[in-house]
Image (cartoon, rainbow, N blue to C red):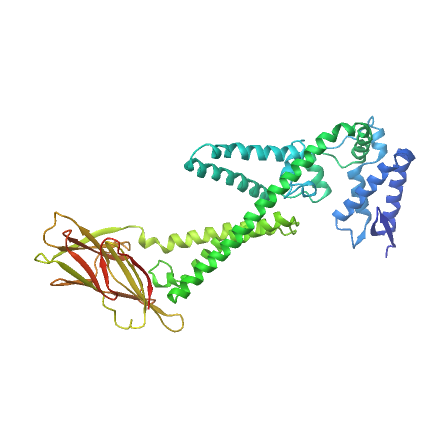
Length: 489
């Protein structure tokens, strides 16, 4: 069994095998001899890089083995290799890659990562982002309302583009990724050059004061903008979730049936509506959760966990939306072709002063709730009765449309059937005419007898001076200023 020792490298504790410790100490002694006491900080930086590379390889909490040290030395290089190549180490060129830079970022490190890739200061990338957003929304201040909507959509595009880059661009978490982001090698020669460049620039720092102040100003401005955007996203996300819940709950409270139960009463081209409901809710819920999470992250600037919940939410939303669209297309397949071919004309036979309309209740609908909309020239209504154990039944009536014209002398009725289900247009008896009384007959639907897209329309043609009165279930006179809409017990 190999002997294990405990050591500390730049304040980080490691357990290391004896043979690995020997080669590590030899390497550090070689570095100290090469750089001397005048450049001890270079050796400290290299030790810090060694500690980071060991942590990156999972050696924290485990035993550092010989091959770990050998691999790190091959990455960093030996001073003798630099001396033998005229002062530089000849290694493979580092290929740049785009990463987010959370360490130097304000929101997610997108702009700072792009700045590192383009060799630009992150402040200027942020300024460029703001300038582009401003110019594409500039017409808002001088052009009318239509252009306002177009430009606001472009501004939303910039926000969506940033969020998409946030999701698809990985963060630079490891040393290797940070070096790839900047196109820098990881060897000791590069560490020494960075130290020398920093010492050289000490005397010129006073000239950078203005740039630092400018950068601080725009960084603060960016933080304020991000906070405002975060508040808006939080409000939109929370409001969307509340609205979805209210939409589902209010229909249940008002009508006695949940909105999610409605597909069970419609003839669809699928056996079960369970998956349609689940993925339909997720399609509308996940964006609200994503906006709430992103808004809170912008407001409080907490770091995203390693499992990247934003990306997980986005992928789940794509999956849910795709499945919901597929299920919807399959379910609605019978309703693609609308037909309006069945028509019948019924005449009153003589001119009259008043026409009465009644809508008698269907059998079994004594305690049902009435949903009615009666306007100047239109009537639309149905009954809903909630049964026990989630069962319910609907009683729908033909839609009544009143058309007045001075060219009509004798009133008459035209019955038209609009069908969206497999082209069927035939219906049973939906209207009767007796003297001046028009009776609209109900059609009852339930989970056993489902609605199949056939909608009868009764068009009542009459002279301008003929009155039309609804007698049952609620008294209503069709005319100027008459309007009644609501849910009645």
